[in-house]
Image (cartoon, rainbow, N blue to C red):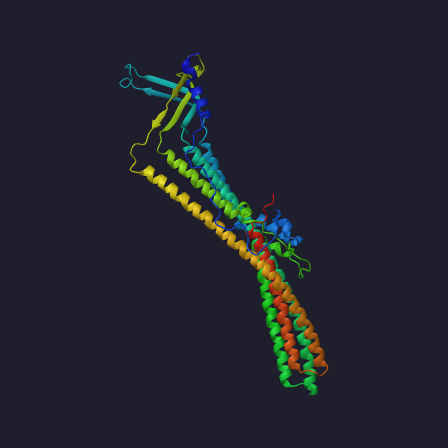
Length: 464
């Protein structure tokens, strides 16, 4: 078989097998600039806990599922991931040779004075075959590093999407807790208003009978109006929490999933162990995304270094040509071309040196960003642990205070009705009891919100 017949197929096979060396620096994860353990906590290693396990309430889980499918902000984040995926696939395609099939024909008439033989006439040419578009032999890893950088950017966008999902889960859960808190506060205010209106009616009767003063009546009336004002405030907070949930869920019928009364059972798992800071590096989406961007900057350095070396490109074609269409596949119609090219940068005005300097500076910037992200995450977890721990103890104290003021209210009412104490002391007991019960609801809500924040800061939802 003629040697030139093997030239193009052999070249195609050779280019497919060539794998360039990489000039990118070896990646080593920077040391985390944080302590090896959380302060003031002895919690054991955190088990893999996904959001379905963290959320106990079935209606809340259904709301979160609806939000994950309909929230517009999350949809935009997921579309950004698809863009990064497509960009990576485009860049990766440069690592393998392309192959095009082509067929073309040409007929033209030349006048005698333009014809090489001095005779005018019509000429025809037909061609079919395969062609190799310009393909760079990646001897120094330039194309490979560009592909690796695109891959790391895609992986960073994946982590950003996971972070967007986690943030949405936390926002829906916190909005649901706020809605439940508004319902609890509303129920307390209505109960208080009913009790104060009954006391006011009784005082009105006593005033008519001359056994109660106008001052007692006005003080009781003031408490009633205070409760009515609190009622309107609670109704407003409930409506706003409902609106926030509707926006987050992304469907107008989200309100159908909201309970008509406050929940008696717990909505969330109440104990979350933080594990270790090193585990945080493997769970937090923002940390993982930052590390992927750092890896991309390492690959950019490899591509910038490769720009100093020769670049070899191949272009070729193989097929059949004939002056007659019927003769395209006859013997002797074979045609081929092979055009390798070599370019070596000699003088570029410092462009390549500046490109490498830029890549290295961007890598150092990515290191600083990565370390800053870790420090921010560590601080957020430490704050969330402190909030969860102190709010747990404060919630117990607030509950004990509310129970004490409830008992004091019963005693004050009995002493007032028995004529032992004045009406003023009874009013003070009413005020204190409402304040303490409302304070307990507020702290209880803050603790549940803090649990959600702790789950988010720990990179919750990391189980497969």
